[in-house]
Length: 280
Image 1: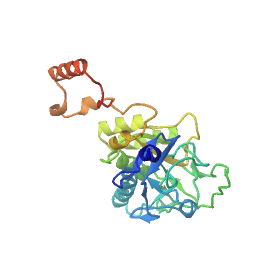
Image 2 (image 1 turned 90 degrees about the vertical axis):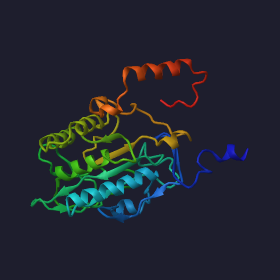
Image 3 (image 1 turned 120 degrees about the vertical axis):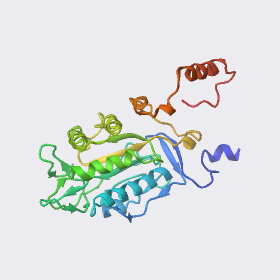
Image 4 (image 1 turned 90 degrees about the horizontal axis):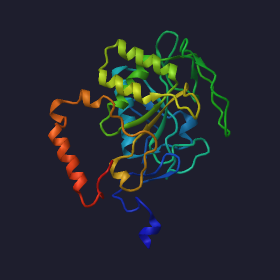
């Protein structure tokens, strides 16, 4: 009876447990991302909310990605907005961010001389035509954005951030929500820089503008898939299945299934007495 009332994740070993979906979920033992670290900061507007909780994997990935970009481009400082609240659950500011697998990242920007500028208490919108900052969207739910100095969308550092997130070993990106025209700018830059074709394929698939919310010309919204351990405790991925497009093409030959291997695997599944334990 006690276990039934407690719910998933209560008796975990202290590691985070993401439960439910990003719109109807909770977060047990969430990791708390420090207010500032090597290469990132929560501007005051977001720091005072203390919506800095996420899964262990997400929090570690954000800190590592920000540090990596800063080392590649000294002076880069990533502004981080909302993750999830302690315990997850509903938020008046978001329809998602409920189970520790979402994060809002403020775009890197530079001044008129190409020097990196720190994030402000604001989320400027960027025009894809000239990449210049525009006035933020009107405030909602009592949120009032602060002023910011003139700035331009920093294509180099924002691509470096996308690359760092896609290459993080502990997470698997489900979505990187971004304005489509800003996306095109990043992909064109990456292609011109000679990035690996498999990385470009993933970025092309995972960077996109959502059809049911704001255009995301003011921030990058990161969403990761459920960790395997969390799926066993009730975490549920909504949306597309994991990205496999062209993955086989770039997979090392020794990792590919031979026709005989595939036939043996299918035969095993078809003759199994129970399907329990198989995760698709």
